[in-house]
Image (tube, rainbow, N blue to C red; front, side, top):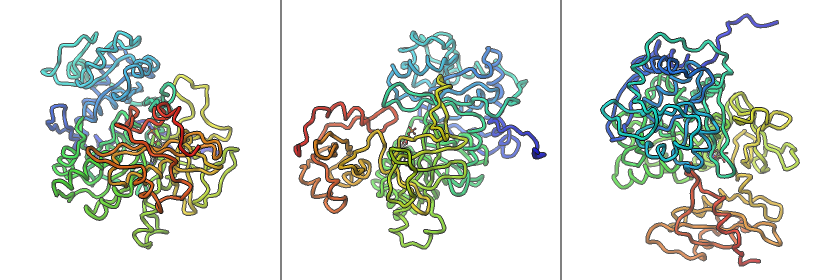
Length: 542
Ligand code: AMP
């Protein structure tokens, strides 16, 4: 027997429609490329997004068509998201930090029919456009007076395109499982892979993000959305904010400490979300200037492990609570958040901190388990470390262009490529990535923990650890260090520094110093590159 409830499809157009009806005046602030600030509201964004839909339909874009965007976080980008998704076109966000060859591959692979870009990316697109087979029109996201000369074929100004549309457009009306957004994951290995979100998965993730045990936001909040709209679905915030009526502040291209501080302060932001690097820059700026954060209550930190020093400094110096979170492009992306659960509420600060520094507990829509190499489930004892598998309605089941190539095991689990423990209270902790794993004498060494520990050395700017082959132990760790400008250090000083902070058998077999640690397009350390560089390096312990 079926329940007798309405069949109300969870499509993303309904999110902005809800904002238009219920909180049309909540604001959206954007920093433009020239640093100036513009203000709009969900009501205006709704009206303009619908006109954009109408214009796109008139130009022949239809349900299921992919349209690329390369833009910073700003209101026009948000209008483009909803303008496309509203009538079932697929918004394909691209990461401008990718190598041009990867961009060409991705745009051609996605078959983008149109391309929206901020003016900063005109030269980049001009350089590759001749090799883009599917793009027919380029939309420059600027006002008429900012429209530049360009060699991009069929270039049109965003505002002119908007003027081609009208209010006579139908949003929604398609199945909630219809594709909605496309985001290729960072390609440190092989070709990038397209994660294809659905309206349903985005809606469920937006509701999940707002839950009190995840980001816990509401209409009383103002959010500085630093996490880029081109990375991992902007952590669902482009949907969560209009859904709950939270004001949204978007930093455009300026993410240095001073610019971030200025927006946090002038817009009285109560929450924010970004990777650790951003917070390091802000904390440095605050230390230099002696400024404080009177309005900010909480920051969501994820994308890579949150260093202890960041969490402690936010706690002790600024009274800001850090919520450490973990996720992946393939998980829409929020997979866990490390909030204080009632079981640890009364613990002393240090003990509680050790839980908060873990990656956290999954929300209702994410199932999680760890398994050994033979796929046997491992106990949730906080010690057993294994492959982290996830399952849920906002987790990918295949990559775009390979719809028949399931990426799940026979029980429907997706292997995250991360290695983790889960403790008896359910807190998951990433101990490594399987592609990075250092297995020494049959036991895991966490390169991430080693890197974090070594980073505490006063001369270290950045640290990376890779495993190198060893005849006795199979693999042993090599610590690669980029020193702070003008600083000097010896390998011995690192050994001395690490002694007592890590298990003795974790001690790196060697320490080498490099000019610069290489990064992939999303800013993560490129272990692939480092493994190539040190392919023939012989450890002194052999
Ligand atoms: P991406 O799909 O590019 O967002 O990368 C996802 C990967 O980043 C995860 O599989 C993890 O390896 C890593 N990651 C994300 N959040 C965290 C975190 N809080 N701590 C450690 N690693 C993280």
